[in-house]
Image (tube, rainbow, N blue to C red; front, side, top):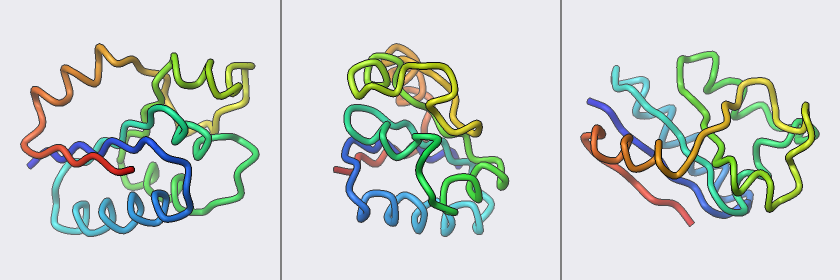
Length: 107
């Protein structure tokens, strides 16, 4: 099963929820992609000291950041995102939503 998580806030609770839901889903053998948009792209900042997201990436979870949101939140300079994050777009989000078996919006 393919699960899509879409985060939109940068609260610590959002990060914890993303981590816990993803861990539970991956442990059951499902594929997970997390799409960060709006303020949640700040969670992908290279200056963040969180073990959660790199750990998820090591388990094969794709961490996608909306390009427009990255620009709007000031994370645009090269190297401002953690190395595990990939730039993406709302267009790709639409495609992912069409392909996902389940989509969950957080925040």
